[in-house]
Image (cartoon, rainbow, N blue to C red; front, side, top):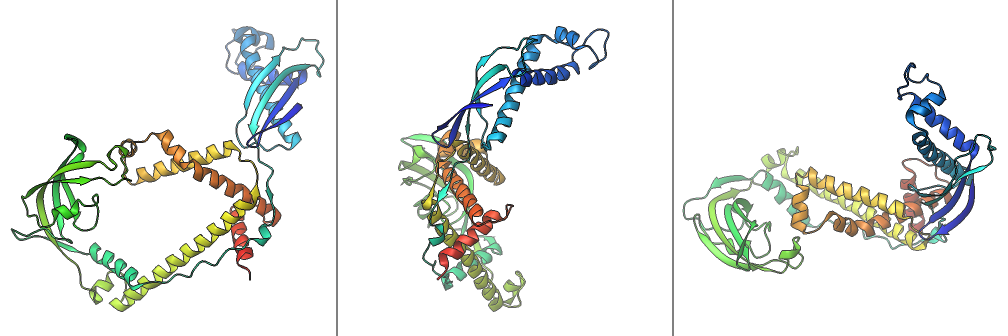
Length: 401
């Protein structure tokens, strides 16, 4: 039973439990049966030896230690059910008193006293969510530039590359294979060197200013130049540093894009280019509508969080942090990016990356708990779509005129 309950910060409870002789004996009997299945007692088959023989063979101390853990676990969860306490993480448990019961001890005699600290679901107060109002998000407009960018992307997918004539000067839009070596403060770095690096000049794949230094070069040309890494460069030790690069042009190819005609449109299942252009415009419109909807939902949920008052259980934050971190790592590895190489490139440890994710993890937990309260208030049936229905309901409330 719980003899004392104390509220701690961050929706955490400190509970003092006691277990009686009957509860300990039950746990001891259970552990004795488990040990009897595996312990070897001469003259008896596993599980058939008398209890006294099993205790003698296995050792009372071993069985008693297991029984102590078993009794604490059973009492802890039974007490939580009786008190209607919902834990959201594993407890930290400390045994403060334990005396094995004598054979003649009454069932009610106190045997174990232990303290459990555990994070629990907080009491959530949200007043006035029925009056949430947000400004309508501007309806999407598709520009001709956006359509043209998609068309150019599709044309590049069907581009033809041919070796450039001897003496061709490198210009934007050409394919080039280059080798380079880089140094900082006069020291060459292996992570700033590559013998064969293909790019299409002008697409901005390299650090700002690098590609501009390649224009006008020919196959076989070697050029040395200095350039400064951006302030926000991923590798912290290189950010805002001046570096010197020596570049060699290995190969140049000219790129021919397909004409915007019927043949090109047929590659994407359309009869003519006008139909393809129309389909691109419609797809862009749908994408922007979805983005508009998501933005509206984010605005509504942000307003909900402002109204919600509750303590944040750190166990839930840690669980969400682990999920975000695992998801991020899986995404990188799915792109064939080595995790150790990523850490080296960013100059950060796993713990530093996790801490950067903590604000998002805390926000996600706040959203989940706040939506849970709305689900209760709106009497939305529990299930996989409950949160989705709660958001839809909030949007309906917030945009009602």
